[in-house]
Image (cartoon, rainbow, N blue to C red; front, side, top):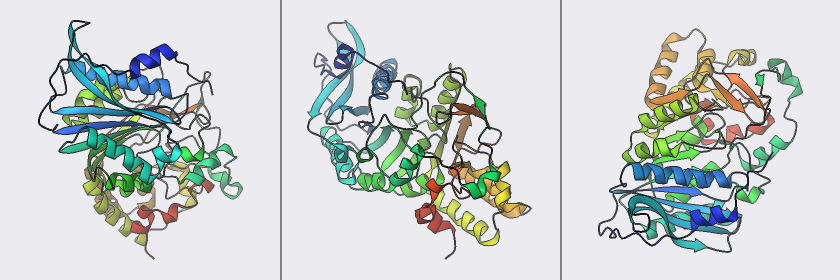
Length: 411
């Protein structure tokens, strides 16, 4: 994978403290702080994090300031150093205009993987943000590489052949359209060690031990909108915003969605994302919003379905895939349940209605892209959230240990 490069001068200009803003410091705490968390995830993605920060600054400038909503950023520029930055809006004397600049609050040195990715380390970072800017409410944006709900040891399997010979008849690895040029996504890291990975229950613990509860969590990462993730995070956030598939290396178009992340218009976040990536040079993107207060009831319906219907493995041929793996790991949830329920229209309708409450906003382009095999796949069914229940990939061997599985299957 080619590594994107950035000059030291450009990087330094983005991360250097700017203290020429004459805007008075607010005496009252902000109504809300949006915390952009960008831990070290390899050199290939770092320049895109810088662009993401610039995009959010542009959004704040376009709004003429965030008002009672403020944005903090923690970005690591290598594996041992990170910067805590306030995106501060005000009049800039040198430029003689109002805009948003990076105001570096603190530089953290001598860090390691556990500083960024352990429950204790993340909670420490989150608490630094709270101490720097106390607020009534917080939201979290996570920029990184990711692999959904999969445990760390399963993610390492993706460097190995993943075929399950006894089930290979259910899959055709030649599906999808080959792309004749390299496209980068946020699927995997740049040779990053396992110490620079975190499992979703760890993230939930870190939030519980720091912020306590979030208005929303936006994952600017691949494969994070799956029901297993949503179930693990349902008690620490009101909303989850994420993609079912791989996210282009450029990530979220913050210059377009930043305004709506600050005002809490989640539907417009999805709309702007869709508009952006539909017209993008790589026109691939999916984004959805899950209302976590509805997830438990969705689990209750799924428990009824699993108790009364048996999955027929051959049905997997027709379920909408939302990844490029072989065997498939992430399936569209509604597409799967529709086959599982078969002719049981009553129970499927109950599921469908609850799913629409749990995932109120979802949009996708006509196809999704997978960097694993550099192929694009058609999307004909899309509910906005995936599930790994029908997967027989070796990487999903621990799916029965997830909180979702335990909540939706009888003993």
